[in-house]
Image (cartoon, rainbow, N blue to C red; front, side):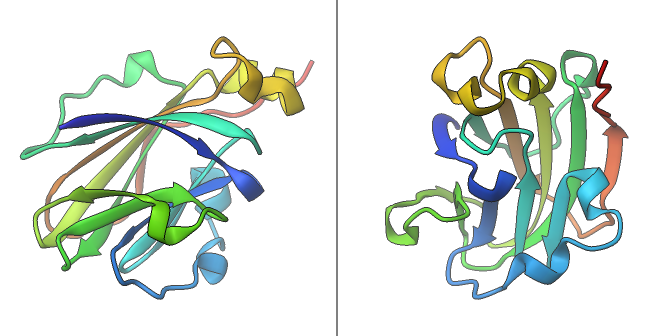
Length: 162
C-alpha cells in the first residue's frame, strides 16, 4: 500500500508512532539522533527535516524489506519501532492526533526506512520551501515487519553552505 501525504514539519520533524503511544520524544533527540535525522524510542520515532514547513511524504507499507535504492536519495536512515497495536500513526509533531493518518501494519516490531530527497533545494528556499513542489523536501517512508535492530544510516547527507 502506498499513500501520499503533505505534512507540516513543525520544529523540523514529523512523528511516527504506535497508536496509543504516550512516548515523549524530547529525550530521544540525543547523541547521534540529530546527525542521523532520526530520534527513536521503543514505540515512537521522530524524523528530522531540513524544512520547518510542509514536506511531501510517501508512505509504503510492505510485507518484506525494500530493495536498496539509496542512489536516488540524499539521506537514508533506518530504525525499529514496536507497533503492537497494528496501527501506525504518521503526523507533523504539532498536528491534531485524532486527525492524523493511520496505517495498518503487522502487530509486532517493524523496520522503518526513511529516504529523503530535495534537501538542498528545501534548505536554499528556506521559509518558501513548502510553497512549490520543486523546492519541497520529500520523504519516502517504507515500513515492513522485522526484528528490532539498531539505527543505521546507509547514506548520510551533510549540508554544505557556500
